[in-house]
Length: 460
Image 1 (tube, rainbow, N blue to C red):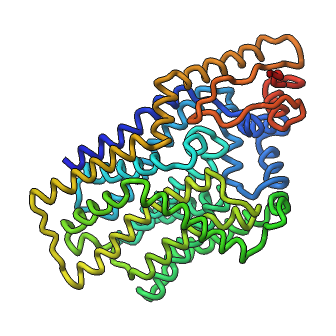
Image 2 (tube, helix red, strand yellow; image 1 turned 90 degrees about the vertical axis):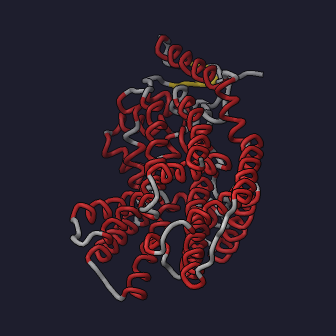
Image 3 (spheres, rainbow, N blue to C red; image 1 turned 180 degrees about the horizontal axis):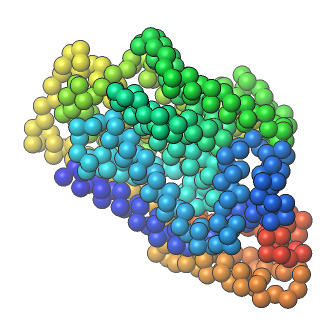
């Protein structure tokens, strides 16, 4: 019954998100800029332009300069979100399959569904997480790759004969993840540091994978930080590069965010259900939770606060919504993992029993259903994705965008005036061109379509 409920929760948020993908379009905010630069200077030179003049996110630069507009495809922007949803669910499923190998596939998929459901309920920005390409290649993609990296490393250490292909894949994932954003660079540095510390202190071993990951990680960090374009971001705010301010602000912001994630979602009730699941798993099957509690908690808090730190240190402001998305995903995964570590520690030493009568099961399920229903119907994200879809806002947005494409293609003049998008579904719409012809996004869109200028009409 529990797995069925979990699957229903997954479908309740996944189906409308998949439907919204059909109405997605490239955003004038940056999506056209990357490909306009490619068309002007060539693919390699365009990437060098961004690396030298704006950011060290070398792998993110590669992905953005390879977006579907490179092939003049709008359809690609409708397909990629579907791929993202599938990839995230697979990464979550694969992670839980490794952590709880004795549970059924249905249980693994159900648990992935629970995390995905909780994630959608309180995501800071759905459009930046799954539909705006310039954002999701910087955060969502490396988040998925990080989950896959963890399972690849677990596979490598689990097998008696070490497979070179797994080592190559693990090293490539480190290179790709670090090259996507400062946030994911911090995550990977902490995970690599934790791996080295754990293997050295608790196992007193150094192996080939550890060495190769350290070397690749160091080279990747150097490639990221050595980019001339990083200076442009660091000079934007007087509070940037203030370490004390950045550290204090990071922990304050984490406390504020965590309160809402814990007490304004069904997380605590799901945590109780998770403890019951753990109690039914043998001690040997909980091997991956056999970690010192203090180490797991410190790593957990460090990874979360570390993701917030770059925003305060780099530009002196609160993290962007897309960065908060990233923090929340690892908050959820880490939350359940830390509970598993704490449970394993106490259960192994004190062997407590969790006898649950039919009545107690009924009470737990009732609390779970009530909290889920309450959170579901009060979630701003759930209301948004369903209303954008069912009230036709997503379809109207897509239709208006298609009409603007037709205006551009049918125009015989070098300067094109476009009406603003009137219907702006929050799940899909991020931003638009401006009335100023010299705005960066206007110039990028005009260059992509081969026009001298594309300008938004001024309206009252």
